[in-house]
Image: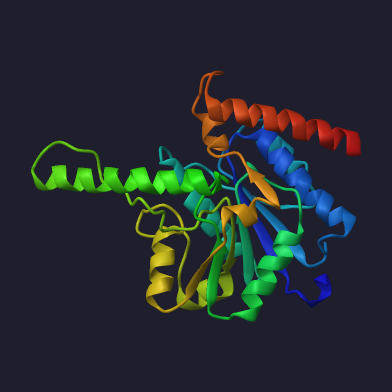
Length: 269
């Protein structure tokens, strides 16, 4: 089935997350070595955002990836550094399709790459395919988040209109697909002169608005479907570099997942 698919790239940005990055890449490599993905049709690109630690040395040791080392320009926000890294990958690749991933995304079933590519090829007006949610919370929890978010949003808007102190009102229904796993038609992006990091906003958000305004489709995949193929440690990379305490729920989940996955990978070698 893979011979009918176009060549594509996989892109990640690393910053001081050795264990996560190594686990993520080990999964990708296993799919390439098993033949589940055609190694001749897939390019893996990794940007290192001036980590200057063991993760940088690890990436330099890999001969099967394309490594771009991005020097730090000085103090910058994390989303800006990530966006600049994504745009370096965008400029370097020659394929028309790019899967963006986070280093804390672990692909268990490579069929997800094939399904997304086939879906995009069937409908040329699709500019991207991804998921609105970074975790599979289930239908009940998603409904509850939207329900409570609705009241938070409107109560904050009301307070602002009355001149009372209030936090910024955030959309109670997530409007943008996330980059922890998303397929982009970068051939289209380049044709239109777009990048991932625009107007100093979260990478991909302005891009999605512009593409949708021009009539292109941002295809949304449900978390229930997507998470059959992968797992994502929400805020896993942030947890590592931000110094979360050992009691932090997300950090505990990340560490437990990593320990289990690394043990599985060791036994399959």
